[in-house]
Image (tube, rainbow, N blue to C red; front, top):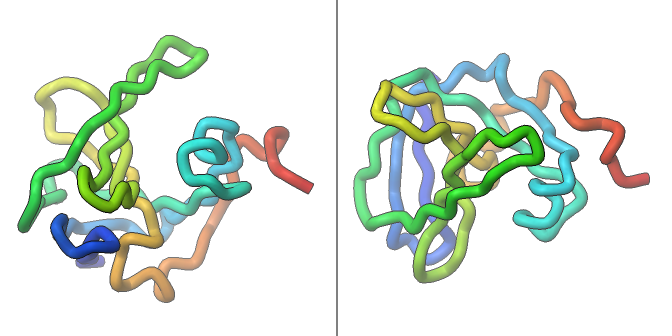
Length: 120
């Protein structure tokens, strides 16, 4: 599925190919803290298909409890979270934040992860 989105202020615009079956609700405490909400919804893009159409993202390197490093990208002006991805130069899959997508209503969550951190 072709998806496109933007940040709240419109400075950042992007497009990608995503598999709707990968639409996920994450309940981890990192997603709770970084989103300011009790959960975060994402969809995975197909590797190598994410294209930044305008703007320049700010990236934050988050080291998980496991030791894995994930890049968290957001708009430097309005702070809208856009994606998380791995480090490295290989064609990457991006976990795009559903709220930033124009097709958000078409992406129904198929699974939940980190449910032991889920809020009541």
